[in-house]
Image 1 (cartoon, rainbow, N blue to C red):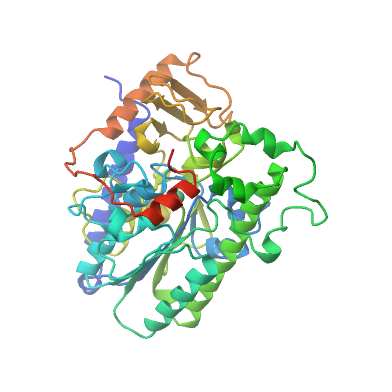
Image 2 (cartoon, rainbow, N blue to C red):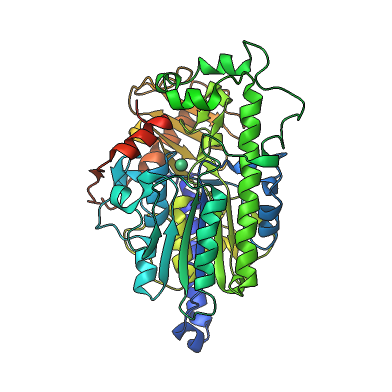
Length: 474
Ligand SMILES: [Zn+2]
């Protein structure tokens, strides 16, 4: 039988990856093989930052000079995806290389099993000092259990903005200065998540200084408000955040401002790594857990659905002695990060891992193709993205978003090349393609069954309040 043209590149990718790994192993200097590189690892997740906000991706007016400079010293993956568009599940995937249907975390009140092996746990076992700082309480150890394996952990009692987060980060970096033991550091920034934080000059960076965003009684935001999910409309916290504002463009402008502000803080962190002499020994990863809808498909200021704006994330990886100023347009996703980093460090990738090492592609060899899986909170919808198409299947009927009802059995198919805004559903026009993509989706979901059991996290009153304030509880 003819092999699926979607699967062929996938199989090819695996074969090439293995080939390169084997050839590296055979030609490697035996001394070097005995002493694998012990680089520091820094992973930044800028919550809800869209891939198209990154100036280095050439899709935006947003100024990100520090991230652009980082991209010049790194590999910039222009088509990186999250595997689920919700914070806790997405971070669980990033640090475990498991899909949501494996780790079972489908919401921000999920808790992953202690049986799951995480990246910090593995690194700790190989002698790394592990640290992390988060700024949403549901990422805390006692709630999500995601930070397992992190020794020096700054949990979130009260949300810290990027400058306060950096104060702790700078202290941490200074404390590791001159130490031989490598470190792992996870920094979670929250400023690009609602309510978008763009202080000082960043507030009006993308909005006319002389314009009043509160002028006019029935502005664009009032029209958008009707498209908000019900639990957003009745949310006093969201009401307080947007009270009096009538121009939706102003809110979008503050998102952009929050990106530039985050960029500034990333720049500070990199400067300190350089000053401390740590930069040349550090693998530096900048990414996000998901994107954000800013009015596309009439979805406003949330990360529902699996359209490109919410599914694509920025991904820049700097490796000591690695490729510089390189753009890779092939598909990768957060499930691939753990196998990729472990391969770079010549550490065995655990058998549980679903992702693939894309280090091969960073070294200039072509992986040609691939496909990624993207899910939605609550397992409401599941999608598969290929280099050209996206296929979405609705798995449950849920009336959450007025403009985007989820209906069990509904299918969507988009040609991302001809229709990058995903406006024309081709499901009726291309039934054979839809069938093939549906099969690909099933293939990607198959494989060894993971028997991890997820739990519902114990949420205290303060966390419950914060979940409500951001519109996560209905
Ligand atoms: Zn998030």
